[in-house]
Length: 123
Image (cartoon, rainbow, N blue to C red; front, side, top):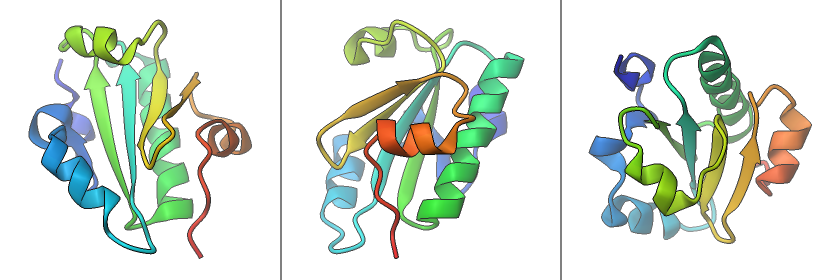
């Protein structure tokens, strides 16, 4: 099953938004720099769905309008796991701004996700 059921304004399939131009544009937006996050899931399991809901809620609460979240189903795009060195799912990777960081799990512990991905709340 496709991850397209999870798409929204800021939550898009990787095919439509995983381009260098998108990342570069987001990286130079000025003082309110957008975060580029990639959530790798293994199918639409309960754990994957929970991870999507949790990371979306964290992003909306702390970074509304200043993030891009890509949900990547590893069953549909296994080559992306190799490129990002993903060994477990769900895994969330902060691609931008650098340095890249990653957190493994269902993203239910907000403090752990924010600290693990080195995310700073916009004020």
